Every structure is written in C-alpha cells, then in structure tokens.
Image 1 (tube, rainbow, N blue to C red):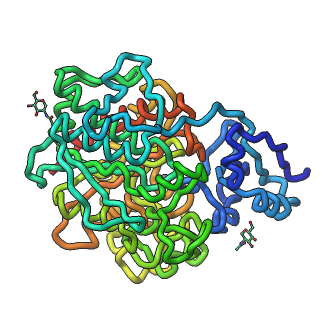
Image 2 (cartoon, rainbow, N blue to C red; image 1 turned 120 degrees about the horizontal axis):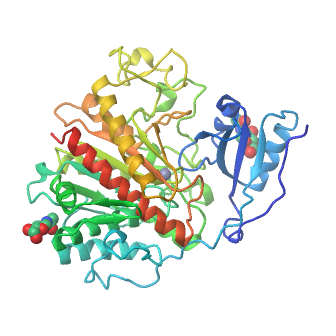
Length: 478
Ligand SMILES: *[C@@H]1O[C@H](CO)[C@@H](O)[C@H](O)[C@H]1NC(C)=O
Ligand SMILES: *[C@@H]1O[C@H](CO)[C@@H](O)[C@H](O)[C@H]1NC(C)=O
Ligand SMILES: [Zn+2]
C-alpha cells in the first residue's frame, strides 16, 4: 500500500496560510512519530501531542510547508503504517481582529460572556491596543491595579501585569495567570480579560456567572477574587502585533539578535525559561525538547531567560512572593497539562531530579527507566485534582471535550513556563512553592478560531478558570 497523500482541499484562508498547512499524521503507535518529532524544522503547534483516535490509531498534528510535505511523502513512501493527511474540513472564516478600540481609551469596561444574556457573543478578537485599553478600563471601572514590568520588549513595548481581589498587600495574591505567549494562539488574552471582567461585574452586582451549562454562585465569585489574582494577559505583544497584521501563524517574539529575516527572527518564549534550558546538556541526545536553530519554531534563545518577555514574566513572582498557583493559557490542543514536562513523573526517588548532574544526558525519553522527574506524591495528587476539575468544568459547559494529562505527554519540553514555575521551589532558596499548569483551549493546530469557536473558547476557558481557582482554593493557598 502506498503512503496516502490526501488531495488538497484548502480552507478559505488558504491564501494567508500559504506557508504553513495544517496536516496530521496517523500511525498505530506514538513511537512511530519519533523520527518526525525529532526533526526540529517541523512545527507541531503549541507542543507535539499524539492523541488516540477512535479507530485505535494515533494522530499527530503539524503545520508544514508544501516542500516539507513532499519530503515526508517520499521519506515514508514505503512505510505504510504512517500516513499524512491534509485538513479536509472546510472551515468558516476566521474571527476578525477588532479594528477600533471598543474600550474607548480605557473608559468603557469589558463585559464578559458570563454576565451577559445566554447566547450573547463577542464579535471580534482584541487587537493589541485594545488589550491595553481593556486593562486600563478595568482600573478605571473597578480599581484594578497594575504593575509596570521592568523590561521593554525587543520592539520597545512596555509590559503590564494587573492584580485584583486581595487589596494592596502583594503578599495576599496567590493566583497567577498569563496568556499571549505564542502570538498565533488567538483569543488567549481575550479569555483572560473577559473572565476578570465577569468576576468584577458579578461581584459588584451581587450575581453569579453562567458559562453554557455551567453556573457559579456569587459566593464562589467572591471566593475566587479574594484569593488574589495576578494576570498578565499579553506576554508577547511584538509577536501578536506581527501575527495580527501578517496572518502568518507567527509563534515566537520578534527579536532579531539571532536572525534578521523570515523564520529566523524570534525566540520561542516558552522554551526560554530557566528550567533545563540548556537541553543539549541535560537531555538524552535523542530528544529535541527545544531547538538551537533560530529558524525553528522552538528556538530557545541565547541564554536562559534571555528575552525581556521571559524576564518580565519571572519578575511577577518577585513582586508577588506568595503566588501558589500558576496557569499559562495556550491553544490549541484541548487539554490541561500538569507537572512535569521534561520526563515521566515519579514520587519515590528524591535524588532523581532536575538539579542532579548525575542524570545529565539522560532526561527526556518517555516510558524508559533511565530518568523520571521527581514530584512529591502529595504535590502530584494536588495538581492532578486541580487539573481534572478544570477539565471537568470546561466539558460541563457543553461545547466539546478536553483531557487532563501530564505535560510531558509523549515528548518532553525544556524551558517552559509551567515547569519553571514548579521548579523554582527547589532551584532557588526562600521562594514559595508554585504549582504550574498549561491550558490548551481549542482544537489541534486550529490557532485562528472561527467566530463561533472564539466564543466557545471564552465560555470553556472561563469555566475552566473558575474551577481551577476554586479547586486550588480548596487544596490551599498558603
Ligand atoms: C528535516 O526535514 C527536512 C525536510 O523537511 C530535511 O531536509 C532534513 O534533512 C530533516 N532533518 C533531519 C535531521 O532529518
Ligand atoms: C466586591 O464587591 C464588594 C461589595 O460591593 C466591594 O466592596 C469590593 O471592593 C469588590 N471587590 C472588588 C475586587 O472589586
Ligand atoms: Zn502555545
């Protein structure tokens, strides 16, 4: 049987997506994808994930150029178990980006879907200026405070985090959420800003929140706010500005230090954090948890936390020393990821951990016994509980299914924000323990949602944020 190359049926946005085409591979086991995922010139969306399919096979999504598809077709010509498929479903037009400023220079507060009549929708994705305007409006309307972060981005943007719910003492803030790390993952900042807006509107009016079939009481709203929420809705403004103007599925920031044209521009902020950053030293040579090549979508940068966006993200932990729970909002895989992301978890051998040089060169391969990352069993129980509750809430909205899985999935990552958050407690002295999660809303490689998907994503994530926070509170904030 010949390798099946399904005829091209390009979606309506094919002109803008000309460079990268959504495809998926199908094979009888995740191991069949090993060679493919180890080629760091390919783009596997937010993270490579092999998902089981109904017919007992596994699927791996990717964004590839015609040349890469042709190369792989030839490579696997005589390997009938592995097939490649182009996206066949013709999708509706993608959601538009807002053109003006719906928040009128920070004077009109955003109103989320949880406090609007059922069936209401939001008609476009916020542009970069609107995200700033929304944060300002939350300040004007509800007294939300902001922190100006210390480093300007490569293109000169000033970054802002905001905090609300627990007064002026920054050590009373226990929840931290960020979004907009990967530029093309559209709707992430909107999900976060509309949720905060809902909490504040419901708190003010004494009402609860409704997200599809999922409802929350006013007491729950007040409980979540009083946990103290720090939010950083746009971690990568340079990348988002570029993506929104080019429609190029841009992921990284726009730093030109390591490359000045095309795909060689930019660092993957989510491989740049100071957690096993120098992966060539720490991981098994067969693994590619990030890339040293500037043209790769997972280029790790020039040093751990070399990027302003990464440093600003980290500075939030210094300003709010009692953060206990962190979530980074990404798309699009339909899952919630809990620690760790560098290898399988284990709770029995404390010495087998990311700081122990005896294991350098052994980390990464999943399913082997050479290395597994240590997580205390009580911590594992806690993060699984919070992750499952988040997914259950997202599903209860009634739109679609989500899964809770360990972040390593089938392939490891290095330098990611969730692992960095959890690693701080062991890597630095005198800092709080932080449980780190990554939420991946939406469908695989579907970075530009249609308008209806964009609205569904707001409902799903907002219910997810509620149960994430409520379950975190029940596990403990101190
Ligand atoms: C990765 O894929 C490209 C083509 O898409 C190919 O030219 C290159 O040789 C591959 N790299 C490795 C290490 O196999
Ligand atoms: C929540 O509502 C109460 C009562 O109206 C108010 O005092 C408090 O400031 C509100 N909290 C926030 C964070 O806006
Ligand atoms: Zn992402």
